[in-house]
Image 1 (tube, each protein chain N blue to C red):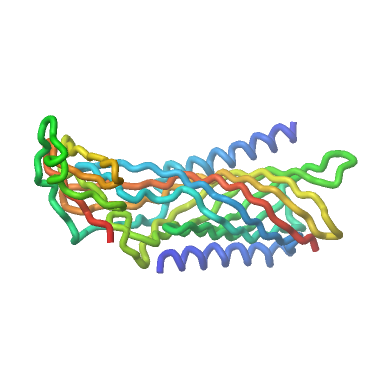
Image 2 (image 1 turned 60 degrees about the vertical axis):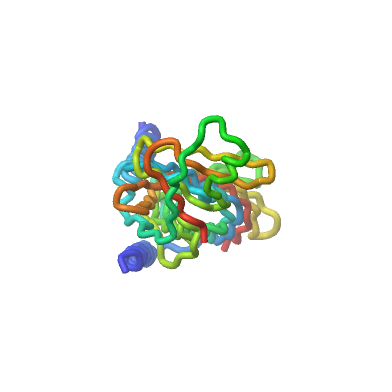
Length: 201
Length: 101
């Protein structure tokens, strides 16, 4: 319920911003690539040696849009929704940010770098204590990050792009197999390297 | 001068976002796993200089099994056999195995 409310609030704010500022979509794109989400385990009482440690690597898909008719410090708005998954975990997040673009003189491609903020959910597909399949066990929290990328035209209005992101978050998973033992798994950062296509309107 | 302010503001925005994300405890809710039913106590003590027969009497450890040490100083020994099987015994303290489903 809380997660749904946060997603609704963020979506409403974004859509209000678009209408209020007469902002329009400049381009949309789809990226596919690999995410790597690092985690650490802190034992508080006793200790837990997991027989099946969670996989850090994810296959990820990102749908994004860049906006026009609005700039802040000559940076353009960027919005995206990403779903990353492996056999054990699903990581979904929405991001909003600002990108600064740079096109080398006489070249067709452009570079960009930007800052990102958003909200994400890390959903467990199994119980890390006993590997049983689980439903509705997830950690969530705010995300901040940076990204860099490059776009190159391959046809009229169509671009191929390469994108890299570094995201900071703190998803906590508490393990309490008995009253006397407790431990926390923290997923604290995600790096993403993706390739994709975009269409400029 | 204006360009310098723009760069400075951008850097500050990044720093503030990173601090908010990293130091605020995430701002969300946690996942939690507890009350595991399928436990097996590691109650066979390790023998100094064990024979193959001694090791065979230790507790089987299967792929995906989790070991929980109830005391901070609890210690177990895990033997990896040539045939790929694993055995576990207690050195000191209280520990148990959560069996993989």
